[in-house]
Length: 416
Image (cartoon, rainbow, N blue to C red; front, side, top):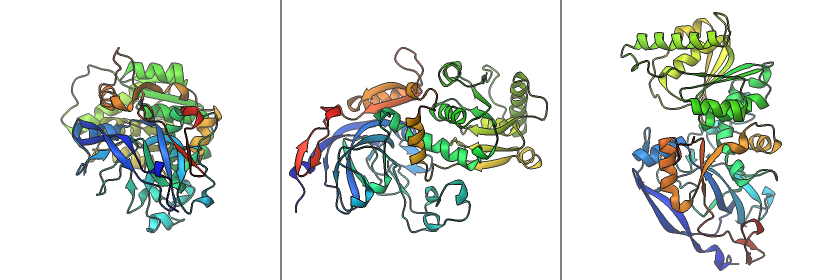
């Protein structure tokens, strides 16, 4: 039987054609194929990688080769189910969060349940050799992201959202999954009441602070150069302590060894201010900036026998004090996206255990103002100088979702 005609329709999408060349376009939609559901996207959070594409037309080595819809932190409502989806347990009208990395299910990382999978609760499909990730230019043809009205997506990557979660909070499942994956990689819950340091107080760093508190850390300390972010960490998230990297200390030394020396001195200053004795430090350090000097500082902030999770990305080739890490057995742990994290991330978001989570969305824009949303994220301050933590785009402003129930179209009550 042919799908209802309303499944063939047009939608609004924000499409990137090149650096700072965003265009609002009308795109056609198609019925979901076997194993897929159609989702009306409602909320999409903007991420640092989206900003790199918007600003430069590339993210590291991944260069835009054709027009691309950005966005990968998203939630929405199921509007139609394709064939062969009854096993999913999903239903039309259900609120879901989208996990947007589509793995091949055939390579060794998708199939292997050994080789470190105890820290990821299953196969490390985030390392899939053939991964296609929505809003990434790594593969070609590119796979469009979530800054569009409706999209079809595999049902196994659509995760039910707890009733108490708003669409905006549900969209935070993606960045929360990153820090949850990092916490698993550091064996966080096996450390009794760990002392945690988070370097970088952007959205991911603040989520790392909130998660650490929820998981039972005895101390959670946030470090950043921006006092407004640290104030948010103290007053909204409720971290134990904060430390502001001194401004005005001049440009970083051109000599690499001098740069490491300065990072060590910064770490020693911070540890002294925290009342820690020489040679002591934190059990777990989340480095959430990707900045070379911060990675160096993270190693010096860690106590002997501890772990540093490299969450931030930004320094492809870094000068790292490996002897300080090796001689003190400070483990440097790579973190790339996430695997098997969404159900727990959504459970945490709905539990009320994550302090400050409701206030992390600081700016909201309709899809028609996506360019303004990106410019706000790029500046790091709102129109009136207010702090930017997470910018959210409301994708429903141009067209309401239409559910297809027994061949009849209807608008879901929450969008009516």
